[in-house]
Image 1: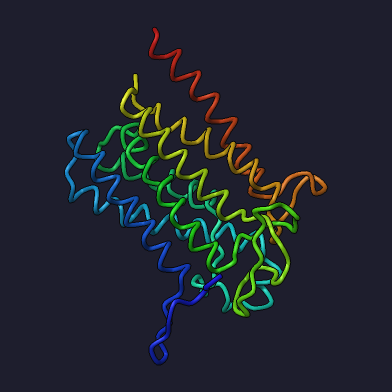
Image 2 (image 1 turned 90 degrees about the vertical axis):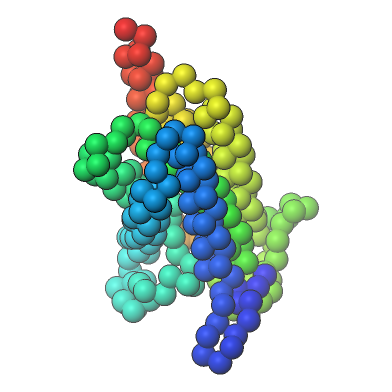
Length: 254
């Protein structure tokens, strides 16, 4: 694909960074729109958005580094080369949940309301960011002979070049957009606070478990290569979300 859009002297605009930025902006715009419908101040959402985006990037990067720890021990300066790709959304999700919990308590917000607010924003943000992954070649898939297989030929691509691969980045993009649409529908018909958030966790984790089967990059593994690290995190989140969904329903029925 096209890892770099153009260069002006020492300045290079990388496609990955551009789409991650666009994803962040789309997520922030979505959160502001939903926040207004809930009577929340736009300036406070902007402040929260900066913290959410920063914590998401740090958490995503941290999990990626953990998964590929031997590579970063050998080349520690590569930790800071985020423009080359290397974010694991599940790590960012965990970090954001922790930060939102702290933020909600500090400013006396309803935690479920805030989580509902940022769930559709996270979906559309990740979806758009995956287009950047596609152009950069990171998060690439396994080799395949399917009609929609993609072959990366750019010499600067991160993907394995000149071999037809699963376009897992596009799978993630499509899942993100579908989840976003579903969450917006649930939001318009929600029966209780937290419903959007819990369904986000369920849908996103299910999608991750499925798409991970087709990934070809280094994912880390657990339980004798039965699961990747990302699948393990997704599985834990999925089980927790399902339990919380039933618990939330039972509490509200009393």
